[in-house]
Length: 328
Image (cartoon, rainbow, N blue to C red; front, side, top):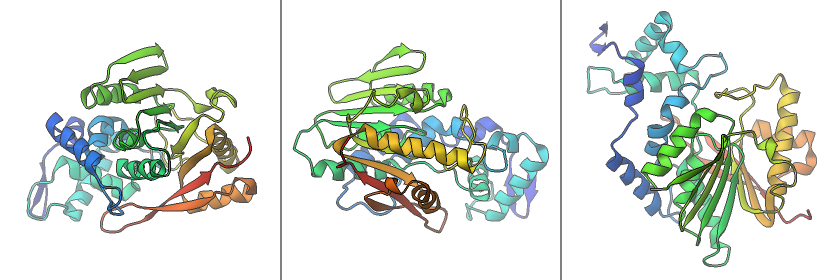
């Protein structure tokens, strides 16, 4: 046992840290219901509804994410010097001031803050985007959503909570095949959806209100005509260069390689949206400005400002929106 001042930290294992984010199915159902009942007319800038679901199903793989220093949580935890330093920092941060024992979750939170937060698209933000879009459409209209880098499931969970249409179709792409089982478990356990395996990379779920197809492959495999003018909403959060490196992700060799990729990503997103559809991409201001500097024709229609929270401070997340009223 490591003892620092009056705080103590047991010799936790990786499993202890992973289990700290696990919840009973009833708690997850409550989180799901909280998200479904969230009033988008009164939603605050920061809502954590649905976050417990993301952590429960995707946390183990999220810890695989490498930061700019090339390390992930597992590599830190399995190195005695790095682990000892992490424990010291967790004790110093003292997240649970009324408790004398450091909780395993505190080790993750300390690493997350120190190395730069591994961010995910909040389900509440996605619900708000989908619901607001549907308010401008005909009642009982079906909605089709495309997500080119679906990541930790926040946009899928938020879309399924929107309840703003007759039927929700969601098509997602991601190169991280390690996410296949978490997505299956999520949709089976919380949404009671059966699934069929189309091929090694594609899984399909469907009932009377949801039609979900998950592709565990690069969106570039879609081609430039397969989904042309098909989706009401194309919403996603592309990688911020190599700031976070996920399992099975090809890193970008340099700045030019990244922006060449991002130009294709943005262009395809616009192309796949219906003529009256919307494209929304979560980008940093710096990345968006550089994108438009290189391709002025990709300037967005408007910007949505979404609240995020990091510790005691709040940073601004931007959703750059293209209103697709251009000729195809």
